[in-house]
Each structure stands twice: as structure tokens, then as C-alpha cells.
Length: 276
Ligand code: G1P
Image 1 (cartoon, rainbow, N blue to C red):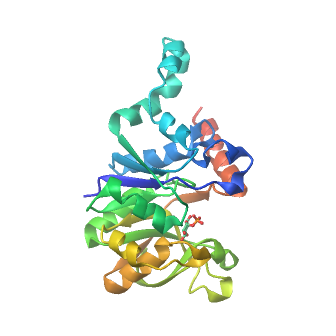
Image 2 (cartoon, rainbow, N blue to C red; image 1 turned 135 degrees about the vertical axis):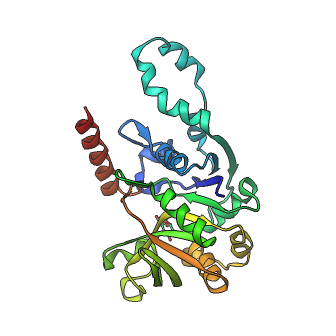
Image 3 (cartoon, rainbow, N blue to C red; image 1 turned 45 degrees about the vertical axis):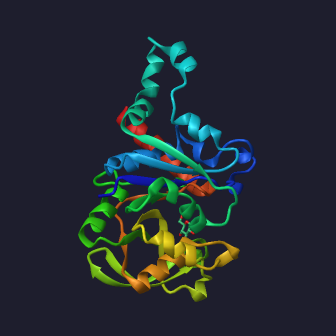
């Protein structure tokens, strides 16, 4: 059973400077909701309620968001504005939030390893909050991945097809089809140039990892950019055991980029207007 979801949230968010100079990128809002709240709601939709967040310096706003602000609540108590807090209150009721700090930014693999203290020896999900995923007509992406995990009991990554000239932004896999939308990973490369990419199947920010990944990360040498890459650790896991990739149903917005952020904003704005 997957009970825990880890959110690596220590990064500097340099692509959103100057907004992220004093504000964590995870609390940038799409409409009126911070990015990381969408991620936590997705975890809850997959029946995962223990939230672990790997933070860093300057991330206090993330912790404050998942807490009660008594002064504010007192101020708006009894007014119509209380309705704005219903969703976040419900998350606070349903989830526990634990934090640990990544002292140095040494890559996503290192961030996940830093989260080991929050996870322990059990399988867990990882959500990169700047990849915002929606599937309005069915199961959330994490729920789809959990179903694959429950059937095969191994690590699962979410993938989507990207234009060949964008492979340099992603972990890219080489894989054989196992069943509809599920692939066995044979090889994976972190951020390859288009000419070196083994396919156009890119990993997006959703993972289910078995706990042996922690020991594997410990023995993985630094990779692309001198950082400890989760892609490299997963490649070792794929060679020793099995790692699956799920071509998920739904849509993913790269909210770590201005274009994706605006697309997500428009998507949720149109959805809101259609519901009014
Ligand atoms: C990370 C991973 C990469 C993955 C991507 C998904 O990169 O290293 O393999 O494809 O997330 O968003 P980042 O975007 O943090 O540079």
C-alpha cells in the first residue's frame, strides 16, 4: 500500500525570478491556489495522506500554507470569504505534513534521498509540484500509477510523448510495451540532446518508488550537471529488477516554465468559467 507522498521542494525556482526571489516557486498560484496544493490534492485523490516535503532555505511559506492562520481565520469568520478556505482546511484535516531540509542542492536524486527520513522502508510516491497534472474525466495520474504499482509491485514513472527537440529537458526512456500504455524500461538518459535521445518518451514529475531506491541512490555517481539524478538511480533499478513507465491519461502542464504556467492558468480559468 502506498501511504506516503514526497514533495521535493528545495529548488530555487530560478526560471521564475524575480517572483521567486523571496517566495517559494511551490506557492506560486494557478488562479487562487498554490501549485503545491494541487499536488497534495492529487495525492489525496490517490488515497495518500502522509505528505513529506523536502524544503530548503526560504521555504517557510510552504509550511505556513499547510497550517492554520488563526488571525486570518478570526478576521473572516462568519463572512462569505470563509468559503475560500474550505479546500485547504479539508486537506489539513485529511493529511499529516512532515518536513525535512535539504542543506545543499545536489539534484533530484539527492533531494529524494534526503526524504528517506520521512519515508522509511516502504514504497512511496513522488510529486514534483511544478508538473501540474489533471485528468478531468477519470482517475488522477497518481491513482493511475498506483494501480500499475499494485499489479506489478515495482517502481513506476509517468511518461508522455514530447517533441524530439525537447528531450534535453527530461529524463528519456527506451522501453518495450508490456500492456496498453505500460512499458518496461530498458534504458533511460537524463536530459539527452535530441540526437542522443533513445525515444521521445519523457518522464514527467510523478514517480512511485520502491524503498530499495534509497540504497541505489547512495551508490549512484553524480550524473548530468554533476548532480545526483533520480533517472540514473532508476536505470540501475531497472537493470537489477524492473521499472515500469505509464503513459498516463490526462494533461500535464509544465508550470516550471512561463508558457506552461500560462497554459495551466488559462485551462483552470476556462474550467471555472464553464462551471459558473
Ligand atoms: C526532473 C528530472 C527529469 C524529469 C523532470 C520532469 O528534471 O530530473 O528526469 O523528466 O524532472 O519534470 P527538472 O525538471 O527538475 O530539471
